[in-house]
Length: 260
Image 1 (spheres, helix red, strand yellow):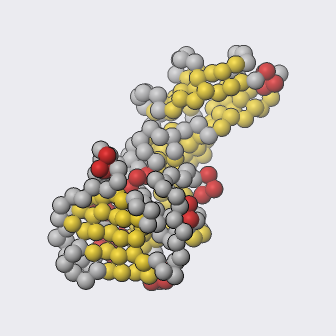
Image 2 (tube, rainbow, N blue to C red):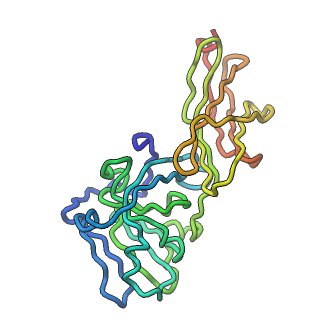
Image 3 (cartoon, rainbow, N blue to C red):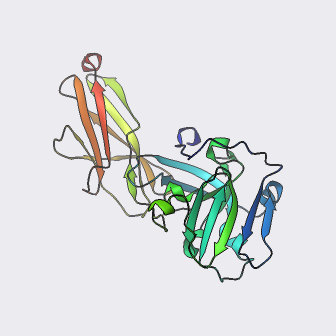
């Protein structure tokens, strides 16, 4: 899935050399923990699946297999006197966390069995299962442990501190199948882990239930819906989860060639 995984960043992708990269954890009192890239790769690691959305309602959803070191293992070297953590990245981005959230994070260096690409955070990034994308900084270099909250980039702009994920859905594409039928497909995710009902409607008509197609990694699944448009033209396609407000609105253009 890494080829189709969404890519978001606030500035240009930094060009980092793993030979000169390091990751530092500091609480301002004890000796900092500093890891080179080679030292990171030599630590006991965990392989896990995680899917998340960029932000609530964004429609940007990704699912991948990751490999990295549990942050809880790295944080054991520090006395539990801190309550918050702020991660800093090479591009100037930062993200802040309460203690219970940062302890379930991973310092990740592989994605779908290969080293992270530059676009996805090489040499290393944080992955926090159950959170949205702004809690997953790429090109991470430093983690500061503090007694007071030091807000990160989006937290300064009103984003929540815990960054809890929610349900989200997107429409990836439409395939003309012949006989006037169109197959719509996309992805959905529920970070809360509960069962959810996915519905679709066209041009404001009644909501129709969408069945899951393929269960994916860690609370994500692919969906599809076969639809026969009544005529050629532009249609408003809306998707929602659990009878809430529409979370995705897409204009789908149906040409005359697909009606034959």
